[in-house]
Length: 215
Image 1 (cartoon, rainbow, N blue to C red):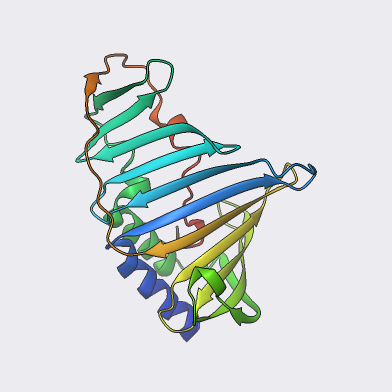
Image 2: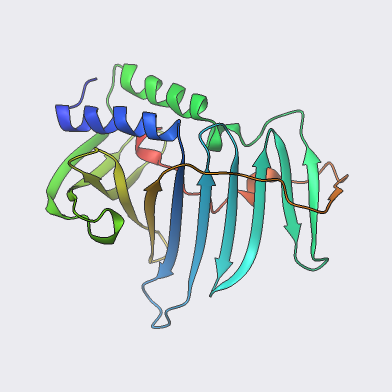
């Protein structure tokens, strides 16, 4: 590991956690608006490549997608119906598959050029994210293919991400909180087969919070 000890511990712990279960709650708000309106996406991942993403807008559920054993289920709210689609090309693997995540991390760590930097900004209690734990706060910047800057809260005991905050180009801010523990993904019922081949799964996953610093 080419980073300092604290960051190396964090990366190792995060890989292990990604192979287990975690829930990411991502909230996007607009700083320019006085309204408290916000969009939210909750992603449950079981560490086996299965996941469920539930999206809400101003408190109303607007999207629900399940990926289970390489079969995708999505809810049509107009028809009040779950649809099922089996894809030969696993388009969701990069987002939910721990093996893909680990391979991306290895590529980053083995690269001759380090494009991601971690600058420690301070320390504070983790609060509701992880009661009784203390979090180091880092500014994370990347000058590689994906140019971004974010703030990450990493606890000093388990060395796990507890929160990530990123300013958006439209003046908004995206805040993602992380919780860890077993996740169970179940098949919805009843379902109908979805037969339109042009469905773009990538669009359905736009709200999935991906932990970009390690990728």
